Image 1 (cartoon, helix red, strand yellow):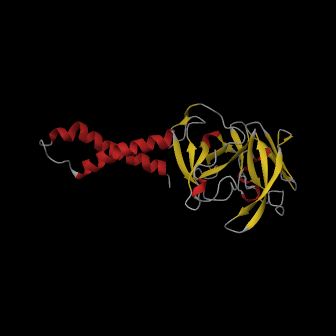
Image 2 (cartoon, helix red, strand yellow; image 1 turned 60 degrees about the vertical axis):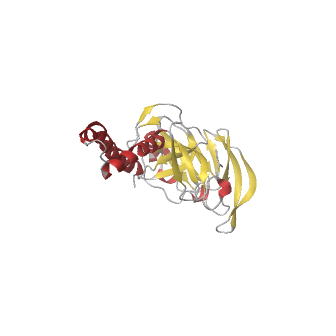
Image 3 (tube, rainbow, N blue to C red; image 1 turned 120 degrees about the horizontal axis):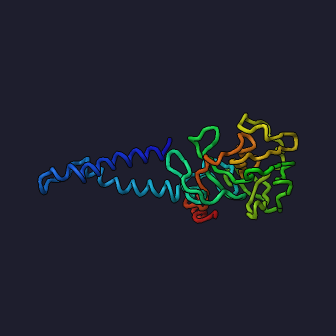
Length: 262
């Protein structure tokens, strides 16, 4: 469901009703006559929809985390807020950038349109920038030949499944964040889709190496062995960027998570 498109259609419909009444129909009604129901509802909803559409399109947009690919940073059921102008101002619906601002940085948690189906929004961590060589060898991440620092952390308990996963703190672009790496999961990528610039990647039993093409980004989930990401479906074009995630604003199952993240 393209909620932005639905909101835009509602905005147009209520705006037409409001404008027609404001500049035409109201002048023809007898003094003191009540507004028709369609004018009353249309005129009432128009300013509300206008404010929501503006905020959602250019300032901040809410999302719900549907999968565990970003555990332990984000959990299933987290409702997050996404900054829509950090990476530039884009036209709603078509997602075309009209004002350039900041570029994504390594370590950012970013929402983007899934390259294989742009109607879907995905969320992952930015690992590789345009021109970077990303290597994932025996579950260690290297960027442009430099190993990204990691240190062991207390094991992570999956409360819904009652088992522990090895947890590490990885420093990526100066950003410390937790990742999970299962001991028994293979280092190699078991299956790979055919994606644009697939020739930029080499896969083997130890992992893979990819050179990120210009205008694209390499994304990975923090739950490294349970994430469908750029290792499988390729690079994220700049045109697919939605915004930068920065805060958890609600979680029905754990109110203590409200205000968390960064």
